[in-house]
Length: 121
Image (cartoon, rainbow, N blue to C red; front, side, top):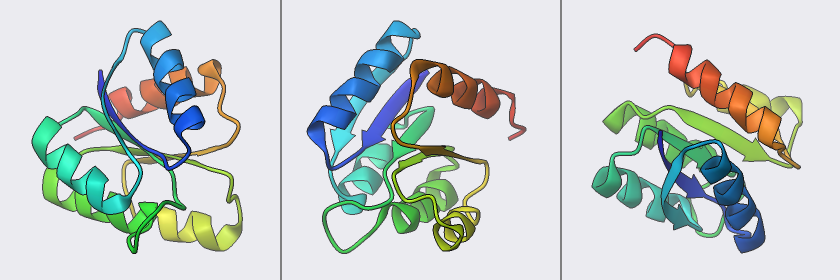
């Protein structure tokens, strides 16, 4: 699968990219803001987006994910340190959606991608 990673912490983005590469996936682009992510998805048309919720800029990851999914139909896998009920409820508006709490392991990534691949539509 081709992937865009939206993550404002470079070391985390690089770690995700390395794990994804080992799993046979290709990272097309890194973004540090929601706005950048929307532009990147429009340009790159990835199979999936890994999206941090709290990022640089006025648009958070949930807002960006809603735009990405509604405009392009691209599934989103949230990767976040914020695992509170209010954040999960906001994120649930994006479907299909997977919610991973940091730190993310290679096994977690693999299961999340399998879930996205098996989701209808």
